Length: 257
Image 1 (cartoon, rainbow, N blue to C red):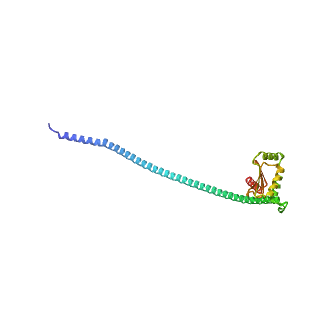
Image 2 (spheres, helix red, strand yellow):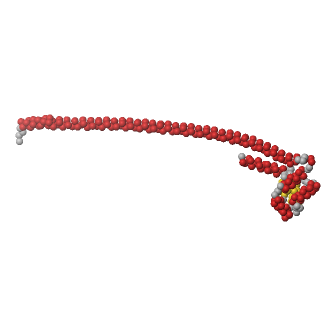
Image 3 (cartoon, rainbow, N blue to C red):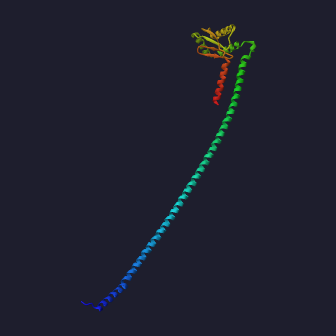
């Protein structure tokens, strides 16, 4: 088979024309489309990166704002706490000062009342002592002590006490002496001599009748006075008893105040 040169040449020319047509009509438009697509993709990536950076910046601004807000809130809480503590300290200090003032005032008032009470008590004691002393002096001053023994004065006072009793009470004492084995005991602070004992016995028998038993006793603590001790009763004109009554009256007066 022989090869025709013109045929090869024509075929080569056809191939070149085909390549040129493809290059002209197909490759360049496709390349332009690809280039445009690449450009769009790159632009999309660039826009996405810008959006990402903007979002990160916004997030940072938000975080900074949140941190500032937290710091401001913490400062406000700290300031409020300090103000509350300051107010509480002022209230406590004012209350403490007021309590101390009230305590001082109460102590001063109590001390003033105590001094007044002591002064009043001393005055009452003095008045009571003068009253008791006057009563005791009157008992032995008339008639004068030199005119009669104290024993006779005490005897007269006891007889006056017996005479002042109700008839039923006096009769009860008489019956008690008659029925009891204990009898009547005459108690004095100093000893009575036989003559004085005789006068006492006669005077008491006139008022009470003959007792089943009459005994004279001495009790030094019985200051300035005498007692008639029945089995179930005591009749006393002793100064010590009057002093005790005065003490009881003073204590009762103190308890009342």
